[in-house]
Image (cartoon, rainbow, N blue to C red; front, side, top):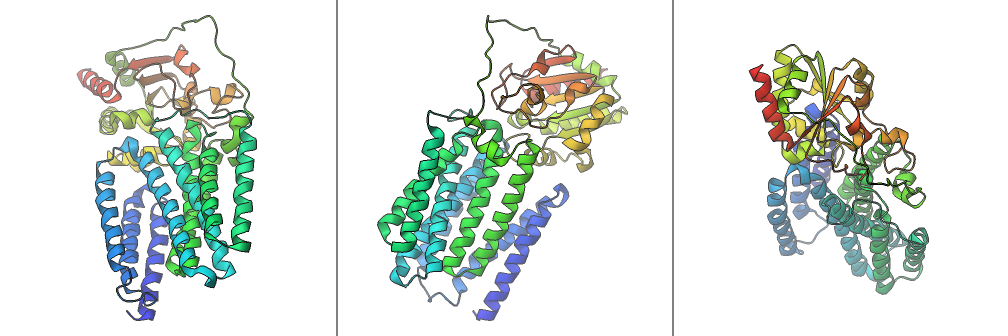
Length: 460
C-alpha cells in the first residue's frame, strides 16, 4: 500500500475515533458513536497488514492468530455478559489493554537493544510502569465488583508507608533502566508496578470503584500512546491520547459528583475515623407494604419520580418499570427518572439500562435538575438503589460516602423502596431513610414486585 494512502486511512480512523467520542457524549447518539468507533477500530486493525514500514509477511501468522484468539474470547463474552456484569467486563478489558501495551513495549525494547534512543527508552519505561499498574489495578477492581473479595477499603498497619516505598522503588528502578538499561531492571520495574497497582486499589471502597475504573482507563490510554511512540505508530498515539484525555475528564467529573477530591477517593480510607458501632442489638421497626398498597399510592399521585439502582439491573426489571411508567402517564401522572451520576457500578450504567427498555430520553433527569423538584413530588419509587439516596452522605462524617451529593428523595411526600432484604448497599452502610415514617418497603425481586404493582394498578 502506498505510504500516502496508508497515512490517509490512519487519519480517517483517528477522525472516526473523535466522532465516536462525540457520539458517546449523549444517549441519543451513543449507539451511533459506538458503531463509528467499532468501524474505525476494525479499519485500524486491517490496515496494519499494509503498513509500508512492515516487511511483507513479517509475523503475519502470529498477528492473525492473536486476532482470532481475541475474537473467539471477546465476542462470546460481550454477547453473553449480563448488564449487571458489564462493569466487571469493562474493568477486565481495560486491564488487558494496559497489560498488552506493557508487554509490547518490553518486546520492542528487547528488539531494539542498544540502538534504542533515550526517548524510546523513556517511553518504554513509562509504558511498562503505567501499563502494569493499570493491569493489576483493574484485576482488583474486577474482584471487588464481582464481590470475590470484600468491597470495603482494605487497609493494614503501615499501609501508606508500604505504598510509598513501592512507588519509590518503581521510580528508582525506572531511572536505573533509563540510565543503565538491561533486561533484569526492566522486569523488576514490571514486578514493582504490578505490586503498586494492587496496593493502589485495595484502599478504595466499593462506592468509589467506578471512579478508579475511569482513572485506570485513562492510564491505559496513556500507555497505548506511549507504546505508539516506541512503535512509531501515529495511530496508536492518537487513539491512546484520546482515551487518556477522555478518561481523565470523566474521572474528574465523577470525583466531583462524589463530592470529594481524587486523592481523598484513593487514599481517604487511611485517614477515615472508625465509625461508632451500634450496641445492644436494637431492632428498628420498618413499614412494609404490599403491591396493592403501592398501587393505590401511585394511583392517587400527581408526580412520581423513579430512582433506578443496581438492584434494577440485577432483576432485569427495566422493561417492567417502563411499563409501570407508561401506565401512570396514561392516567395523567407526571413521571420522571432521577439519575445519579454514579448509580450502578459504572458511569452511565442506568442510562444504558433504561435505554435498553426504550425509556424516552427526556424522562431521564440528572441529579442537579431533579433534586429541586422532590418537595413537589408525591411518590419516589426507589428501585434497587441505596447509597445514592442515603442521608448518611450528609449527616455521618467518616462514613464511606460522606460528602457525596445524593438524590434528596427524603424531601418527597412518600418514598417506596423496592428491596430484596435489609442488606446495606454496596458501600456497606445502613440507610436511615428505610426507617423513616414516610418510607414504605416492598420486599422481593424488583421485577416480580413491579409486575404485581402493574397488575394491581390495572385493576383499580
